[in-house]
Image (cartoon, rainbow, N blue to C red; front, side, top):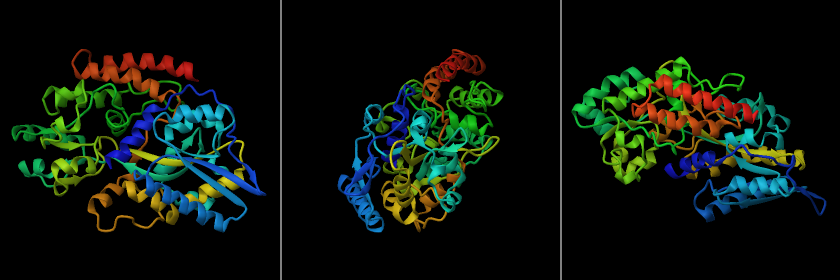
Length: 416
């Protein structure tokens, strides 16, 4: 699971807001009287042969049911995918359909056909609300969700057993109460990456959301992370660093996994890692999947993979293809190899008997993919260093967040 979620998160980090694209795709057309739908996919399925087999099989199945449509799926590397897609769109040679993640939807918004124009009403009602929220920009669903993942609180059973606790904490207060007891037994309560290259979607933002705050104001015109909720979240986090309840070296650097206290089994809980990532160090039998932590409300970071339709092609044919792929029986082959979850509630259970996956799936409904604005990544760039500064004691949480908000407001003004 680490590979799949990291790739999505890394792809998210790579998105920029400097899109000056042509307002159409350009990949579709007709061939022998057929409508042609070009699709750009990326290796969600890590095994190259399995990935090719999945898409080839789906193409044939769709074309058999729709003999008047010819589908062409091409798989490209994750690396530099926005640069390549932007260049192709600007040249009028982009695809009709592409696999996108949520924060790309805001960047490509004016190039996309809203999913409401081709998504069947019956399918829309079947999607998890958290999945639909993840694809909605300015009140419109801009793509069709096809898969999801989420990062619940995950704990080391050995650490919890050492203090006589047998379930993961669910609230900030619960976790803070366990921290000094864990420290006495030689464990850190949590791990937190303060390295400025780490995505805040997986580190600070979940705490901000749990405290009832948000990154941007409701209208998107101002930074909102310096609210009382934001200060509360950063102050709570600083308490853990000040008391030695989280490894202080991670505030400024990101060592290889093997060199971390998490890998050494010295960290009790994390909301920034997956079960697959730690299983080789903790042992699968020692992984306890909890829920999303709560202060005001439970929220966990999650990812959503989508299929989006670009303007300029045959909306009817491309929309029919997207809706076909998104049907639970068809998308299952894309979802399961990477340990993902279907975005629809009417899908068959892909992991019967797998208690970790079933516990994780329960958290999907409170998953948040992060802000969907073109300024999101640039704002993260000015906020992360200030959070690090506060954790190092160079500024108070309020000072750090106000300073970052001032810089963020200037960025937001330029992006609008």
